[in-house]
Amino acid sequence: MSTPTPPVVVLAHSPNQSAGAAFEAAVRQAGWRGARLVILNASTGESLVDPHHARPSDLADMTGRAGEAGVDAVVEQPIGPDVATIILDRADALGAELIVLATRHRSSIGKLIMGSTAQRVLMEADAEVLLVKDTDR
Amino acid sequence: MENFSLLLEGFQAALHPVYLLYAFLGVLVGTAVGVLPGIGPAMTVALLMPLTFSLDATGALIMFAGIYYGGMFGGSTTAILLNTPGEAASVMTAIEGNKMAKAGRGAAALATAALGSFVAGTIGTLLLTMLAPLLARWAIKLGPHDYFALMVLAFVTVSAVLGSSRARGLASLFVGLAIGLIGVDQLTGQSRFTFGLPHLADGIDVVIVAVALFAVGEALWVAAHLRRAPVELLTVRGRWFTRDDFRRSWAPWLRGTALGFPFGTIPAGGAEVPTMLSYAAERRLSKHKDEFGKGAIEGVAGPEAANNAAAAGVLVPLLTLGIPTSATAAILLVVFRQYGLQPGPALFANSGDLVWALLASLYIGNLMLLVLNLPLVGLWVKLLQIPRPYLYAGIMVFAALGSYIVNLSPIDVGLLFGIGLLGFVMRRYGWPVAPAIIGLILGPIAEGQLRRALQISQFDLGILVSSPFSIVVYVACAALILGPALAGVVGRSRRGSLTPAP
Image 1 (cartoon, rainbow over the protein chains, first blue to last red):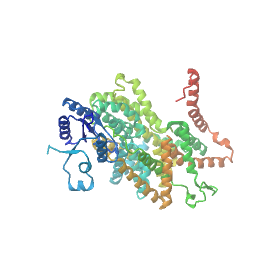
Image 2 (cartoon, rainbow over the protein chains, first blue to last red):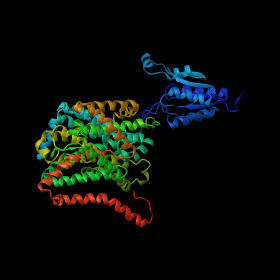
Image 3 (cartoon, rainbow over the protein chains, first blue to last red):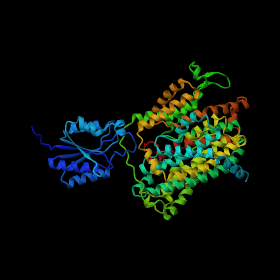
Image 4 (cartoon, helix red, strand yellow):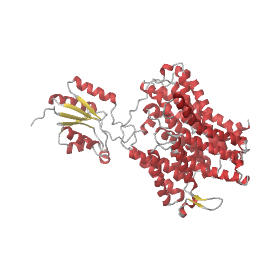
């Protein structure tokens, strides 16, 4: 049973240093698969100013660059208590084939205190998961 | 000249390292709460009051005055960089300031706001220093009926000016007056609204009501709207301050000061009105009219100066008459009374040392604010990243702790949350909180003055309008209530339409 709609690649985007590498990987993957790219920039909406919340201009720039690579990209900025849950739910609802995530090195204390979004998505997602590391280091 | 030497003595006291530290702490905390929308100096002073019982009066008042001035400085940062005014008095700053930041002139907008605040704050404090002793000398002649008239004027203006409608303002005022009545009547010993509960015989402590309405009410309100899309923070870009910026800013600063200070001294609800007037004036007078709406520096300089000058002006009636004209001033009045001081004509005579040290600390605080504000913009902006749950959980801990400390009674904590719920409902339906606070604090004082006046006159109501001063004040009250209504009716009949009056 094949659906007429193209497959979906979800990029869980958060503006940080490894985001660029993850974005490029996601565009490449979507290109190979002939897939639609959904850029998911989830934030908790708990603070007035949130560094995880991407600027509209940056997001527009990203969809533009995806378009140049021949990939159809849309942006979603959902808000909810837990970012990993949002990513998992949206990927499920979109029937995503692949979820692309950026990861970074974290200290053991950091891992102890804060849960890892990447880890939860990796363990619980039904789709394939691609983790992209920060390449600058 | 006599005042000048007294002021110098005040400086001598205020420059004491410990008081300098209190002033520094005050302006630091004040700027922080000014930056954070929804948390203002009134809430902060109310929250900190129970925790500062161990400080001496001068130290506590210097710190709280610093918070008060700092709040006015801090509000502009959020207004300019986020388009979200931190304080009601910064609403006008946001209009042009945010446009300037968007156009890459954020640094200049912040600089003109900070310098304007400093200039206006210093001129305002200077005017306060000169005017207050004169007014105090004149105010000794006022009788209780004159005071009562002034307080009625304060009630009327605060409820008429603040909030979205006069009906809501008055309703909020009466909530405050009603809570102020609770307790045993001082004169006759009758219980009022105590419902037979012995705990209520002393009334509900003002601190508890203020903390409940400001802090708990706001926390519940935020909790009800917890998740909102984050706001885009503009970066501080551009040259700090050019010669051209200064040329365009100095006149608006002075005009803003001239508008702000008198508005602060009359009971007109603090700094909101003069900032609006200043913005309108700059818009009309500017040589760069085309820039208004696109980021005109005059539109930042004028209103920012006006709100700081008004902040200084508010202290004039507070110190000389004991009449607060804004919510923060009302809380400051409570601080004075907590230390057994009664602001009014006698304050300068009885506690001159304290008053002059306080005035001197205002100059120092202003200078500190100027030095602190601009270099630390990055730090202030970081505060906005604090997740709301953490921020308000902290506030709630302080609120509960503070209200318990007041009487060491768990019943007070229950009252705190009960009244906090009322504060939430008031926010939900657009009732301004400030009139309730002013009604609560000024109500019992006004009642005392009224009864004193009637005892003097042996219950002849004529005494209330027996002096020219009180008649003038009552006429002003009537004009304030009826004026806009009449203007609305006239305007409506002229236009012949049924559009509601604003």
